[in-house]
Image (cartoon, rainbow, N blue to C red; front, side, top):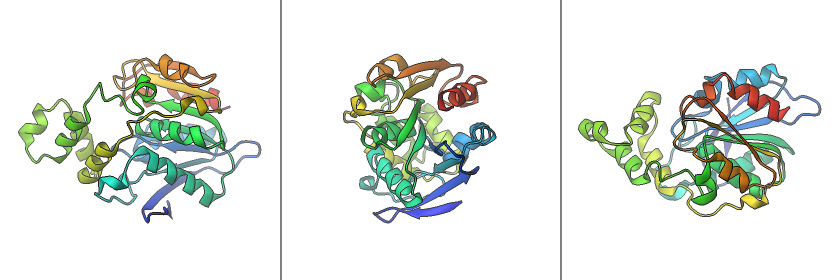
Length: 254
């Protein structure tokens, strides 16, 4: 694991696998909310499959997550800031071209990044659907941010058990996440229009059939010039482990 410091002083953990391949850029993976690069992409076998296919893989832990710095100030968060972190990291690593894969929160980050940065050769948006096009971020209609922030901050076990957002708290506790940092990200989550029409890279929207946070992927694809969409089995937590996910990803990035 390497470390990189952002322009506002946040230490970002960076995981790297494989080696550069002539004619192919690195694949950059940006994970989702609560988890980190290892949990989101290494554990389900995505990293191993990419490396076996001859790809170099770079995956940062977003601020507030994993082994990266975890300020508790809401002003330090938001997917736009994470996209800026990604740009600065790629500048630091002297990456001139990349294939970018974002999952859930990382899908929002990837969309923001690709709308402004022409280094993206191919783009994969996973764990997100129409909400990115219609709301500018994760689909808050499926789960209100206030519920997620409340369940992350409460010390009442009864409140956790009765919350519709209990799954977020259980996952945060399971991975040992900093709940104050996560709540700050919830309160700063991106909610303004993303210039999806400006994305120039060939794009695949790749989602689980039973993912409530990635409904109507066809509507997200329709907002991005030339984008296509594909549905695999699984929900928000299991789509990455679907036997269809990695083959679809590799085929599109080939």
